[in-house]
Length: 294
Image 1 (tube, rainbow, N blue to C red):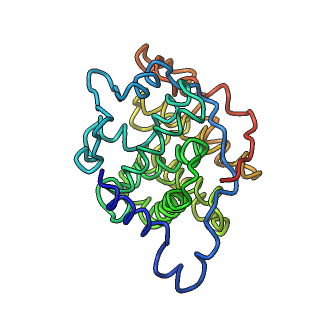
Image 2 (image 1 turned 120 degrees about the vertical axis):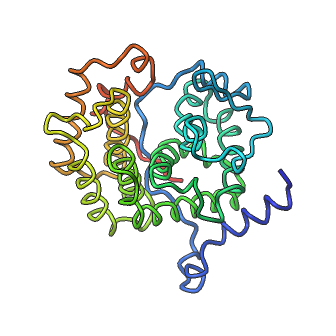
Image 3 (image 1 turned 45 degrees about the vertical axis):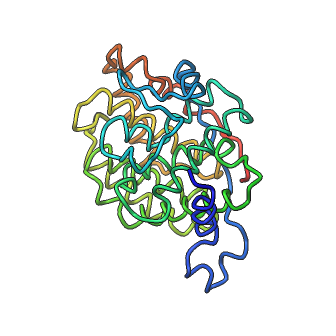
């Protein structure tokens, strides 16, 4: 990673868009108004592997030492798993904020170099939706740096990702992908400074996505146990965003989430799925989230 290139890219992203500079809206640094608490316990073994420089998914592995996000791409299952940053949950299970932030911020910096300045395959709506959910939930790991340029670059890019979701979430494939995209758009509207006017639209988008993908019994039309677990997890993270923002979950969304949970509980996930940390999320939904200002 070339320091001058990194500095140039981060500096550009930290300044924000031309429009924000012209209107003066970039004079005050962007911030998160609150940070949700993820109540799902990550996999410590995978977190330890991350700290040792390895991201492991099944029989596949990514070496983090020389990771180039551009070369990694965003289409294979291994690439999408890393691009979504859900692994932050595992990192947090293995390391406290001080130690974990070094790795999280290093990976985020490399992501900004590869994908921060242009819309490419890593900007797929479902990936951005997942990224928003985990970047906000693990903001203490992502934004501990004293480098104000990096912090501004990451927050500005997060805001750009949220605006991208506002106009592109419905372009995600129907089902879990579209639900994830709208869940990310809604979380961003709840948590990023100035997002309040977009909450109602994002809620409507998420309800459309759920109505098109979910049976009355709460199960996804795909009838995939793994996707059902992820649905419960996505809605659990979103519920935490509502708690953090001190907002009330709409009744219709509460009902859809409860139905998804009931269906997951009654269907009995496979042993392999049960071993995933996402399977632990459901019983903990109703715990409150503490606000955090970044």
